[in-house]
Amino acid sequence: MLSPLLVVWRKEVRDALRDRRSLMSLCIFPVIGPLIILYMFNQILDTVEEAQDITLPVIGANAAPDLIDYLQQNGVLVETVEPVAAGVLSPAQDTAVRTAIAERSWNFVLLVPPDFGDHISEGESVNLELQYDSSRQREAGKVARIENLLQAWGSETAVLRLVARGVSPALVRPVSVARIDVASEQARAQTILGMVSMFVLLAAFVSGVGIAIDATAGERERKSLEPLLVNPMSRLSLILGKWLAASMFSTAGLALVLALNLTALHQVPLEQLGISFIMGPREIAGILLATLPVGFFATALQLLIGLFARSFKDAQVYIGLLSLLPMLPFYYNMMNDTGREPWMNLVPLLGQNMLLTDVVSGRSPAMVDFLLAGICLLAWAAVFIALASHLLKRERLLFS
Image (cartoon, rainbow, N blue to C red; front, side, top):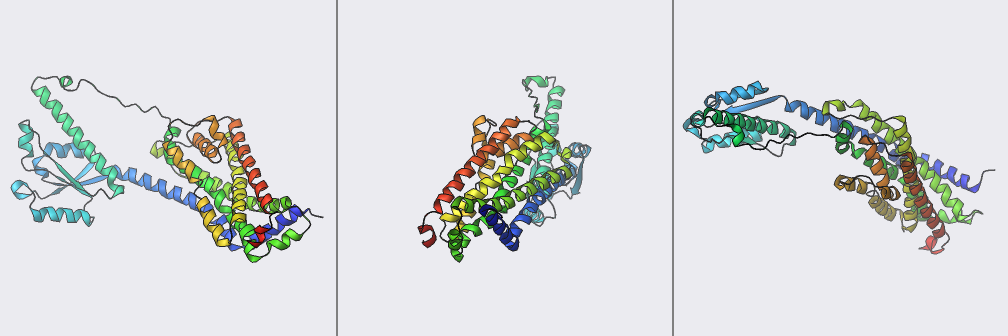
């Protein structure tokens, strides 16, 4: 004969399998994260590749042949536009240029004044205009590359002017700064891959939420919780059965999200971005130890809140706000410059986020850190279950 705990667990699992909302939360959300990752990285790769293939419309190109040659030698395809008469753009011509950019006929335009060559030959300064639309984030890489090329040509021209006058360029450039990035490829991956930890933690809160709400606030609203309490079983056995059923769905969703995200990362050519993603069996085992308890923590907290709620609708509002909890460690990690510290393992969700970040960044935390973070979550889950069991002993819970 099955124990009361297993009877409740089987009943809740059977109800969950019949509930389309529970199945949708388990099946749909795990697919969202990998799709976002694949789309985001493909967009980044496309932007990087497009930044190397630039077509630059130039008005007044005939006035700056040396500059045009320099741009072409550096891979820029120059599209010569008829020079502007009188040396400046008339209001109508300026409007025509802005309209062409707004209508996406051009992404940007370089304006070269007709007296550009005279000013350069006389050692004078001259202004160039690069018109573009800053709201087009996809073109930001191209604009930055064009600006860098123009500044590089200007620096070379300045050096040639000094040499022609018998002046050493070192006199006007006493300090030269060499920027050397010592970060490893995996450390550079931290910024881009940091959101993976947020998806994994969020999955635990989403996958089992339907069962947690229905097993508490839903049964109170349907008046089916009171008959359950009449049965000869302890309140702890009742809440444990509900908790294990919700936790089964929550941990399954978390594991599915983790597996699909890792698979998606291995499908993306990260080496084209100068980063690498290496994860061995030891790291995978550590991540499972630290993150699988998140499912038990999330559902225990959701069950407790569901008992506090007066109706199913109230529970949805409260637990909807609770879903923001996994995002807080992600934003904290973005602003954190000190790295992971031992006390973070004791903070629910923060320890998991920091450990995942360390693994992505190429660092290998000690296995005891993974274990401690997981045990901490299970301890908090036990506290929530004890509180929920205590709430079930109050009569006003049923009649409020």
